[in-house]
Image 1 (cartoon, rainbow, N blue to C red):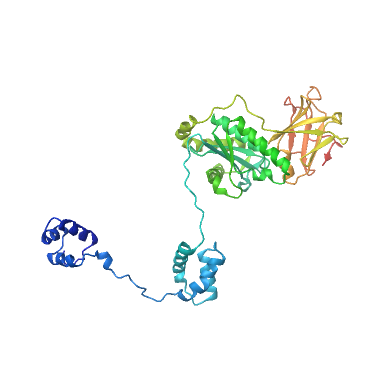
Image 2 (image 1 turned 120 degrees about the horizontal axis):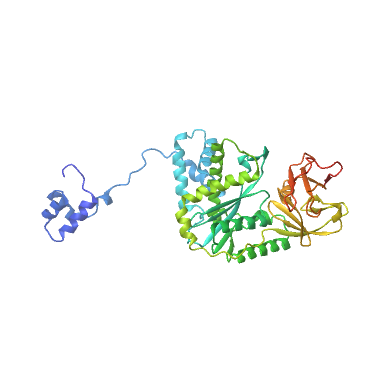
Length: 435
């Protein structure tokens, strides 16, 4: 067409038609004149190859400083941001205008692509149904949850299937530990109705902290035994490499956002008791699972069957009741009735309760924060016992009072028969012992 430049497509079409027809006919098929056709017979280069590259239309504002000052900064500090380099150049050269920031950023990006350091390569993962489940702990203290007006410093144990997105969350009162992992993982597997072939964790970094080599080896053996019980292959991501556990790390943020929104809609972060807060978390997780119910049902068919029974989700310790009428467990001193002085008690430490046995006879069940939680928060527990009971054997019924730093009692422990009737609001005078 007159007045318009021909393009590469027209030239290619002309060359194709020229193999069978005359220049005039080929030019008509390509929609340009016969004169242009005869010109192409002598010059067969494409129009795009004839364009002269456009040169710079104004002086380069960073030509004098890029190689001399910017490149040495990039070499010395490979992770520095381009905006920080630009601000440093403006400090050194006040005459540098703000309008060249994008020019600086593009130049740095091009330099890093050609001469910069190598970057980590992350391959996209394809998750097979029933293959991998992931576990991790996430801190929930910043949400400001309160139980009966008292702030609750807690974590959530978070389990997720990598393929379908099934989630399970369990409120943890203490810190990260094997006991919390075992209880939360088993609750998740039994709620799911099956077990994946592989279980990925973050090496239990907090649980391994401050442990000697033998204790770490024992914790590793117990974790491996837990996985063997459910026929799962244990795997761990490298320490400090969070993206290797990204299938659960990224879900932490979504779960926290859902809990935060639910608290705002509820209008209050105060709950009457811990059971109410646990139910609140369960409802949020159930809503998230309902959105991907079809995928969960499809993956559930690929899961391994569960064993006949759960395995232990507690830590068992033998303690000796001293002449002080108590024993020390995890830097916390507990008092017991003086009748037990000199006896060795078998203690089962769960995440949220503590069971005491004399041989095979159950003595006490202490509900509330686990001893490791109090010790990790630097608290001093004051514990006393009262002889008030419901008429059952004194071996099975004795009310424990636990206070924090000599304040009023905040947790009570019920006897194995669940009796709290007739217990005084405060322990008898002179029965307080501190650690």
